Amino acid sequence: MGQLQQLSDSLERARSQYDSATAQLAQIQRDLRENRHELQIAKSNLHESQRTIAQRLVTLYTTDQASTLEVILGAKNLDDMINRMDSAKSVTALDTRILSQVKTFRTAVKRHGALLAHARASQAHVVAQRAAAKQSIESKISEQNRLLSSIKGQIAQLVAADAARQLQMAREAQVRLAAQQQAAQQQQSNTVVGVSAIAPAADTVVAPPPTHSNVANVAMSQLNTPYVWGGSAPGGFDCSGLVMWAYAQVGVSLPHSSYAQYGYGVPVSRDQLQAGDLVFFDGLGHVGIYIGGGQFVHAPHTGDVVKISSLDESWYSATFVGARRIL
Image (cartoon, rainbow, N blue to C red; front, side):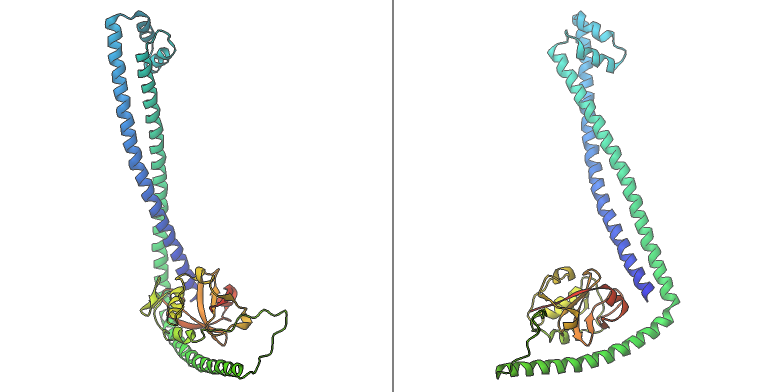
């Protein structure tokens, strides 16, 4: 099952890379269209300027402007002629303006040609990236399918065993939560009649008492609901969607993001966890609702369902980030 989880995570990363390359390719294609258009305009302007130069040569020849004509006739090619005209004192203001236009448009043609070549190279690179990401996705899907086929019998046994274990944990959790709520009510009653609690040591940091312990029961009402990415309703949940929905049922609004949810409430240490506290894992990438007894309810990942897990399980213990108490 651990191998299947790793493959699932790897597949999600490949999909993300594919989506990123697709967005980048769309931008490059827009740049290509723009540069093609600009290059066409620059070439058209250059052609028009060169035509004006040709007309100017005819005028110089027919009007016998000797000094300027000598500059032109001595040129070996168009570049040489432009350089000669640029340095000749006898060239008129009209010639200078035409010369400036030719230089400007030739520079524009060269610049847009370079931009177009760069965009085409970028396009080829991103297309290759996108193809590699697609191939990676297809390969990982095939690998997942092969793995699933090879362990189908084992999975069926594990699912049946896990379902029985989940049912037993749910029963135990319900009993435990009922006892905790009864104890909380008794504590409130004692406070009302003047019975004071023992004060903690001065150097002990204790979070305020929980006010939403019943949210654990709300979340547990969704046990076996399928995991759905982006889901936040009883038809399907992701991890933060389950937390958001459960707290909404008790009148508390939370964002649909485990990272954002970590900014709500107050911190609570692991040894002070109470039912209803939020527990976070994997760099804040995953969240669940503590239900007491070292357990929490959560929506794990694609292919799984809302279930109860233990904080002592290896992955959750290793990736535990912290907990928050929503007040």
